[in-house]
Image (cartoon, rainbow, N blue to C red):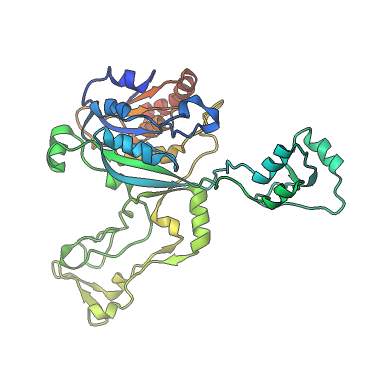
Amino acid sequence: MSARIVCGDVRKVAAKLEAESFDAVLCDPPYGLKFMGKTWDHGVPSADTWRDVFRVLKPGAMLLAFGGTRTHHRLMCAIEDAGFEIRDCLMFLHGQGFPKSLDIGKALDRQAGVKREPVGRKPGERYKYEFKSDFNPEQLHSRLGSGDAGALTAPVTDAARTWDGYGTALKPAWEPVILAMKPLDGTYAGNALKHGVAGLNIAAGRIGTDHRMNPPGEGGKANTYGRMDRIPGRFTKALGRWPANLLLSEEAARLLDEQTGDLKGPGNKNPTACGNGKNVVYNKGGMTMPASCFNFGDSGGASRFFYCAKASRKERGAGNHHPTVKPLKLTEYLAKLILPPLRDTPRRLLVPFCGSGSEMIGAINAGWDEVTGIELNPEYVKLARARLRPARQKAKAA
């Protein structure tokens, strides 16, 4: 496999790439939120930018692009205006975002020119505060220095007391991922044969499970989750659940399961209704099997129905201060969803706005043959190249 990063503007770099030479796009473009004052995040990429990306993709090529909750509508419109068909909008739920909210009560006290005095301290446990009757503000000042970071303060002015507890934003807990496609050249089948790309890699995106699931239904209609062996009465393990347009981080999965508790799948509640109470006759090939075979409801938390990205704390890499790094397992999963089948020619993925390289690393781990990244910021290019080295070595050794 090969991976390279071109340092430059996406439009200028894409203009030099061969038309219809890439099989898919995976990217995390600017959200247009002016995030942390970064100049590169002052607007979403324009339709002209996506037209340049559109040109280098084969017909039927898929595009996955992360977006922001407040601006993904503009990103989606720009992608659509460039000629892409919007196919879906995935939702990535995470539980580790932090609120970026202005405390209105504090702002009113600052506007009035008054200084708040500490009345307690914030402990390590999230969302809880500790109060002490013998609290000494001077001791707290000596521990915290000149600022009030970690201090719990009380409003001073009447206006601040009225607006105490009011903020300006909610805690971020999800990100949209836009799924789009360059229009087909004919049908999906014809496009697959002519251009080597078509649809999504459902098999690679299935949500794995160790449970055995229900067999095919009557009339030969296959069950989504599992399949039946030709040997009467024996069932294979499930192929895995069909991939959903909801993705979870490990923390989000834990929180979801806390809310839902242990759930049991539907299973056949009355197997004897299908036969004589001892055997059920399966109508394909005249095979017979115990009625109990039709009672395979599984159990677990609600997160078992969705892909769960388990991120490593070390995967950022040393010195990586990029503010929007995505979990590598998530980017690998998404890269697999849009990966074409093996063929004689290399499968090529384009990663514009590649930042510190998370989408490129995920693509390498997913098995893409050639990955090309484009990034304007030289500092991020340097970070990405350093992060890519271990992934390249691992891929070559495999």
